Image (cartoon, rainbow, N blue to C red; front, side, top):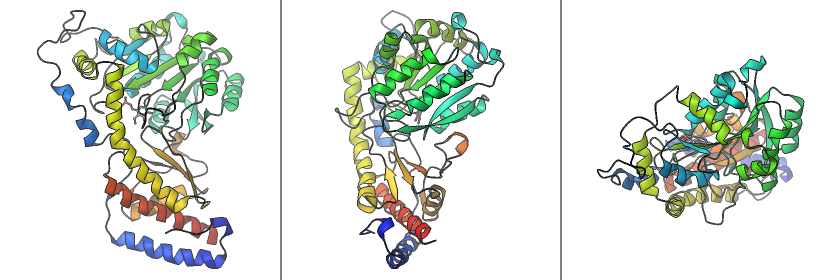
Length: 429
Ligand code: PLP
C-alpha cells in the first residue's frame, strides 16, 4: 500500500483508514500460505555453480610450484600460491599471511582463544594472565557469530554505536583509554554485516591508532569477510589497515581475516589470516597444536581456478550479476512503500550480503513475528546485538541472496505491509 503522507502528519482518521486497509492486506497474505525465507546470508546455488570449474581444474599433478607434494602433511601456513592470491585481498605482505582451512570463523575463534589463554609468544602474555575478565568492543548492529565467540570464551561485550562511516571512534577511543581490560574490537570494514557500510579512511586510520592508546596486548579483529564482494567496480573501497598500522607503528595490534566462503563454496572454501610476522610466529605455533597442516589440495584448487587478482575480480563480477538484482528488488519495495514514511530507515549497500533496516523503537520483534505469521521468515530481531539484546528493539537484517527474484518480490511486499501495519498500530495505541 502506498501511503500518501508521513506517519507523523497523518490524522487519527487517516491512521484508522490505513489500519483497516493494511489489516485486510495482511490477512490476505496470511491466507496465501507463503513459505519464504530472507534469513540466510549464504550464496545461492546459482552462485555456487560459478565455481564448479574448480572441481576439474586439478588434473593429476598435485604438486605446487615449489615442487611440494600437496597430498601429504605439513605447511601449517598454507601454500605460496594462495598466499600470493589472498595477501592483496587483505593488503598484507606475503610473509604476513596464513592460509588455512575452510572457515575464517575458526581462525577468528582460535585467534581469540590463543590470545586469551596462550599469549602472543615474544610479544606478550595471555589476557587471562592479567587476572581480569577480558572485554571486547562490539560495533552494533554486527555479526552474531562474533558475539557468540566472545560469549563462548567468557569475554564480556560492550556495544558501541556505528554510523555510515563505521564505529563511533570517539566512543571507542575513550573506552579503550579508560579500561585496559578491553582487549579487542570486532570490525567488518567493507560491506559490514549487516549494515553494508564501508569504513571511512578516517575511521581506518583511528582504528590503526588504537594499538597506541589501548592497554597491553589489545588486538583489532578485522574481519574483511566481504573485501571483494562489491556490486560494481566503482563501489567504495576500504583503506588499508596494515598500511595505516605501518604508518602508526602498530602492526602488532591487528589481526585481519577473510575467506572464499562467498567467493567459491561456502562449505569448502579457503580462509586466511593476515598479521605481523611476530604475531604470525606465535599464531602458527599455537595453531600447530591443533593440526599438522590445512587442506592444501583445496588451496591448490583455489589458486588454479581463481588464478590472480584479475581472475578474482572477474569471478566477483559474476557473483554481483546474481546478487545485485536481488538487492534492487529489496530496495525498490522499501523505497516505494516506506520512503519518507517515518516508519523505517535502511541502508543501500553497494556490496555484501545484507540490507539492515531500523523500525520505530520497540517494533522489530513484532514485525519479525508478524512476517513469520504470514509465511516470511526473517532473522530473529536482536540477533545483530551482543547477547541478542537490541535495547531499542529496532534492527532487522534482510538477506536476499538465496530466494529467487519472484520470492524476494513476494517476501518484501509482506515485509513492507508488516512494517506499515505495526507502525500505524503503534501510533494509534
Ligand atoms: N565473517 C562475517 C562478517 C560473516 O558474515 C560470515 C558469514 O556470514 C563469516 C565471517 C563466516 O566466514 P567463514 O565462512 O569464512 O567462516
